[in-house]
Length: 174
Image (tube, rainbow, N blue to C red; front, side):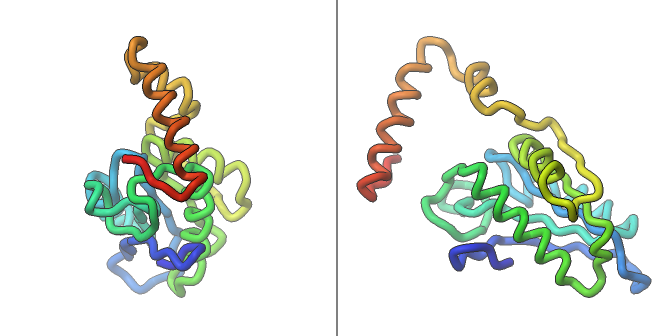
């Protein structure tokens, strides 16, 4: 599925078993530690069997060399929430281009980090008629405080700062 900057997002489309369309549609994405094949496939299959066209995509930069999905984009494994939201808007447009989709009945399903994206998209994109935010990340900063031990926070913040400075000069840190 094409995204901005000539990036291809890896996506699956699941269709209902009948030809009685157009059908309502759902677009789904995973959080930053997952990919489409890890848990969303089962949901997508059930939804399509229930009469929905379902698009499941991996975020840009999530590729096999980092243990994630198959989407294009560099740097690998980079988590840019605003870019992911923009790419998800493109996924919605892609869904609208499918002949068997009812463009007036499109919903979102975001899991984990993408659950927060789903909330943002539902609030800002009039095309969205329903939203599911499964265990959403609402505040990445607050989530991070709970996930990083107190004695490691300063070192992690220093690594983030070093990475930002390196990216300014075109260098990628590990």
